Image (cartoon, rainbow, N blue to C red; front, side, top):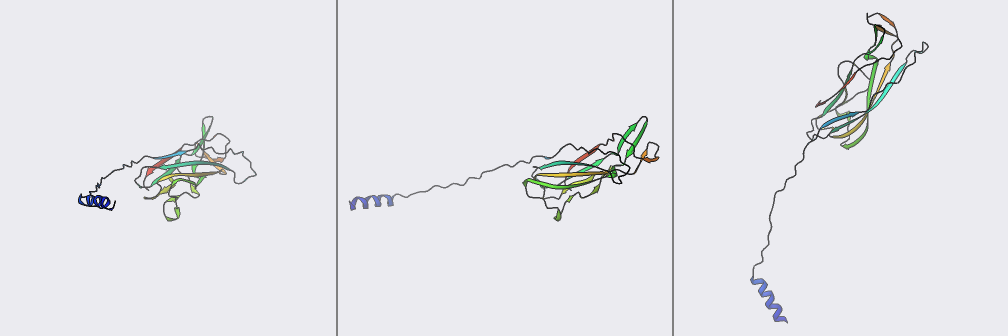
Length: 190
């Protein structure tokens, strides 16, 4: 039995053993998506005029979902502008200046991506006056904001003691349904 084992070992040792290894390069393509913002409808609360109240307000809160799946890390800005609130009585128009509205934003949730830290850059609106020129609601610097985030934006309209009519005359506040057009803009980068 020993001779058979020695013969098999000798046979194995006389034939060279070869191993085979090969390297192959593989690829994965990662494609970027879009920059998108979705916002729930904005509805201000109604105001009932009361001459005994000095600061009457109307509030509105909305949720905004920001999704940056572009994969380029260039940052983004979400801004708002609005027209004055206007109502019509007969032939005459009455205006509540848009500057009577202030807005603030807060981060509600990081759905995916790195949590945002506005203390180290970017901007999140805090008690900003609304205007007919775009004002930043949220802005993240390059290298940040890649992912999906949910924000809440709160608007606060303070009813002025006086308003202006079509001729520019200052009068007391007129009851009516005031309307404004809000414009939201999303841009790449800061």
